[in-house]
Amino acid sequence: MKKIDLHIHTVSTSSDSEFTFSLDTFKRYVKEARLDAVAVTNHNVFDGDQFRLIQQALDALVFPGIEINVEKGHVLIIGSASELEDFESKASLVSQKIANLGGNISVEELKKIYGDISNYLVIPHYDKSPPITGDTLEKLNPYVIAGEVDSAKKFVRAIKDETKLTPVLFSDSRMKADLTKLPTRQTFIDCGTLTLVPFPVSEFRVFHGL
Image (cartoon, one colour):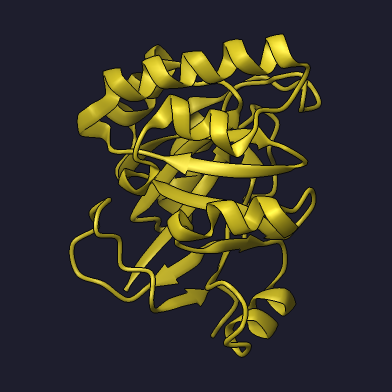
């Protein structure tokens, strides 16, 4: 079993309340939660220099990621640390597009930037606001490996419903200097070595005792 949290914020953006990033908080979270892997997923931006600092400091596998405003919802795109420069350049295009288009890009624009997005982990907000739904979810569906929910109850409902995406529960937390209560929302996956592709998603278990 591996314990993961693939939705963590380290940069304050216009989509967040302002916060000051703390590497010490991030290190404490990884250690006390006993995390095997994390992903840095800021809103529509990727800070490569900060990512490298985090990667060197944490005693866990760290994936580069970004949380993108796609049409009316949010999607996590998570890549491989071995392709960091490529991920950084593509994330820069996302930042430029979002700024120019007033807050969102289309699925078609997402594909144009990332090419074959099956090379990434694609995890939309599912039973979580703002969700990816309808035609947008249909267009993303061939690439989606799981859907993010925001509570243990929603996780349990989704895991019992074969018509729903495989659920994942992540902290969506800001690693800030004044964080007194550490996150408790993580997901277990039943696998051996953690790798990006192919990613073992068939056996997700939530942290809350399941």
